[in-house]
Image (tube, rainbow, N blue to C red; front, side):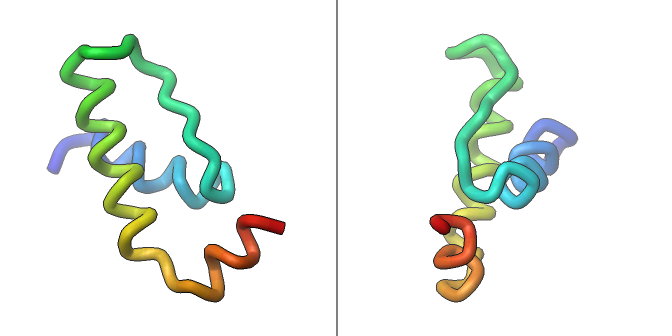
Length: 54
């Protein structure tokens, strides 16, 4: 787990589920950020997801 992965996880919650990857597509940092964001989505409770979609 690296800082870009963790940044992706935090971004998921900070942006209420909206995907906003600040890194260049196809790069290592982009991929790590995306993995972190996706894991945050998978681990998010259903109740919280409902709040994010409002």
